[in-house]
Image (tube, rainbow, N blue to C red; front, side, top):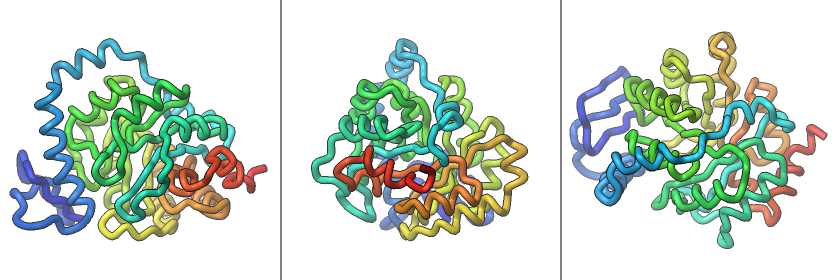
Length: 296
């Protein structure tokens, strides 16, 4: 997958990936590129309103982050559950009209989720950093900031709003940026969850130090098709390397039925990240119980 950037710093090329190509001419070629282009502009506007220096000062006074990976390892549910607070998506539109992020997060906590994920992208997922802050005030579970991270600024912003973990998407970041962002996240006491979609991306991530939580997204971000086989194939291909590094694997997307959880757990996934199939239900706590009925 080739992701072109609007504001490249330098050309960084691999055989199949171009992270920072020259300024694009024309329209984005797929939804992920469209999101990345918009995010670059969005972050620039945020910087104008609130400089990075001020953000860093706010981080210094923020409460210490919670142990995201430790919560997954200590989960009573198997596989451990990261339940997602998510109103909409580019592929499905609005998932829940009566969306109340706090009520949903509290239901997830009652239902036994180990951690929560909060969508902060506004344009494509109708999320916000304000939602992240509201959820932080309402629950005691560790929180993942689900964002398209392109700059350190976004990491500091997420920390000021209560994030304990940060999603990094390998498809949109160079190895240099991944390494740098992981270092920033670790220095802030948070956990990086690095998401991959292919064996090539998994190999890149396994070669980077201090990554011990890897998400395998079953959704193709260029066309949004979903295949649970992605989790099965990637774990099978690099099982020994994953074990040697002590990584936990999180299977993401396309998990709707108890049988789906059984499939990815049998493949070796330690945790699952689920949003849509829980948010759609009137009672998300009851939805968690139904989803894990095979474990009863």
